[in-house]
Length: 374
Image (tube, rainbow, N blue to C red; front, top):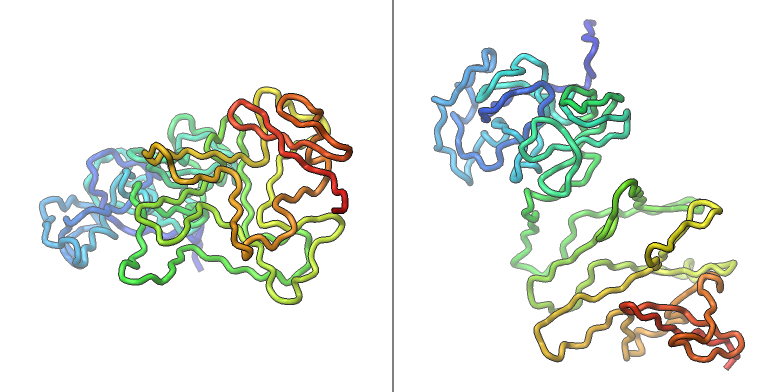
C-alpha cells in the first residue's frame, strides 16, 4: 500500500473552472458563481482539464435559469457579496500560482480536512477563525457583512503578509444562513401551517447540575457589543392577526412528575439573567450604568396619540393569565438594595425596601412592602 505523506488523507481535490481574470494563489478561497447562465455544455467534455486550457471561446449562454446549468457547480470566482453562501474551497497546490484566469484549476473542497490556505492573519493553533471576505484572495476576519467563517487555523504562524497556514476547512462548524444580504425563504404562501427552520429536541436522562441543549460563550476582549453579544430580531412586514415576539422563553411543567419544583430558596423561571464579577475584587463600574435587564421602546407610529405601549410589563385583565405567585422573583434579599427615603423614594416602613429603577436620567423606586401576613 502506497502512502503519500504531507497531506491529510481526508483532503479531496476536484477540478473546476476559475472564471475570473485576476491572479491565482495557492490556498486562495473561491466560491461558486451563483448567477452564471454561461457555460460550455452539459458534461463539460470541451474542457481540457489536463492542460487547463482557457475555454472562453467555447462558452455559450444557452443554459438559462430553470435548466440544468452546470456552471453553478463547476464555475468558480473570488468571493463577492452575492456568493458568500456558496464557498467552493481553496486552490490546491501551486501549479497555477501567479497565473491569471480564466482557466481550469484544482481546489480542496471543504470537508473537514487540514490543508494549506492563504491568509493575512496572525494565526494561533486551534483558535483563529478564518473567513472568506468580499473581493479578497485570502482568508481573514469574519466580518458582519459579506463574509463567512469557513476554517480554523491548525498551526501558529503570523501571516501579516499574506501566505500559507495549515487550516481545517470546516464551514459546518459555523451557522450561515444568508445569501449576500438576501433572506433565505420558506415557501409557505398557500397555507397557514406553522413553519420551522432550525430544530433541536434534546431529552436529558441524567441528573447533572447543568443540562443545556445550547451553550454559547462570547468574550469581548478589546471592543464593545453595543447592540448585544447575542441579538434576536423579528421583522414584521404585514398586518398581524396575532401577537409577535422577538424572543419567546417558556418554562413548561409537563405532567405530574414535574409538580415538585425548587428547593433551598431556588426560584424556577422562564428567564434567568445575572450580572456577575469574576474575582473577589469588585469590578470598577463607576463609568456607566449596569442593569440585569434593560427595557427600551423606540416606537413612533406617526400618531399624535399612539396606541398603548407597555415598555416594561403588561398584565392582562383576564384571570387566565395571572394565576401565578410572583410577578418578579428574587433569590436573595441582597439582590435588591435597601434605599433610604431620599429623592423620589417614599418613607419606608419597617422591613420595606426600595428597588431602584431608572427612566431616562431620573431614578425612581419600586416599593417592596414587608410581608405583614395579610
